[in-house]
Image 1 (tube, rainbow, N blue to C red):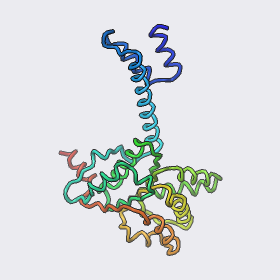
Image 2 (image 1 turned 30 degrees about the vertical axis):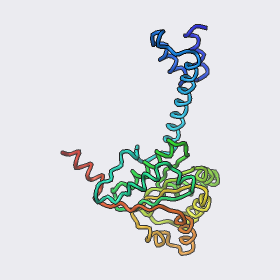
Image 3 (image 1 turned 180 degrees about the vertical axis):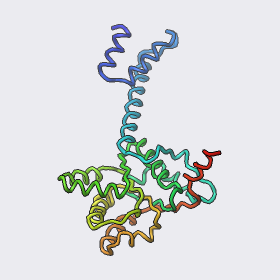
Image 4 (image 1 turned 45 degrees about the vertical axis):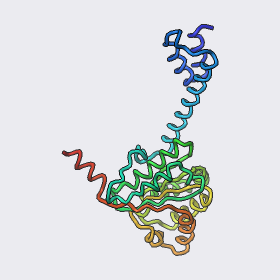
Length: 247
């Protein structure tokens, strides 16, 4: 079998990583091409890396992040109160395995959602399933799912996510159905999966936000049991970026 036939077979078998690597190696002078055992090792590694990259990109698309973010691009400037030591400790995403939650609080524009997105991106790159949701839109979708009979399927999908990110917690009030849905989400995840919450409200105000003492106790007991807290400060990052763009 000649080289072109081999390339055709690799393409037919959808071994894209191997195809691309073999095509590149064929461009090398003969004296630089590796022996058979090394060639096989390189092609196998190329296919593995291609598939891993493809899985990561699919996971990122499925997560629907608010921002394309990276932990390496976080700013730890004075006055932000972003704990670099804690962020670096969380970067291995073992907090997900330990079912630990993260609370990111602070005023609008201070970077809560970006930090949450960066942690979510990191989790996708390490092979975890992640879902990013605006809290109120998620509750509304679950209410529609109740009406069309797909509620349990939606809840099961949320439960399967290793990391659930709930953005804009506290911006709009919850009704009773929303509170009950939130309780079920937290019950399903308690001790098994991790949740990140971003909120303009300090954690001390979350009980009042839920506005039902019994359900608030139940929800927050499950959320705060094992949680890391970061209260971001400083002026709006969006405003700073806007002013910088105008200069």
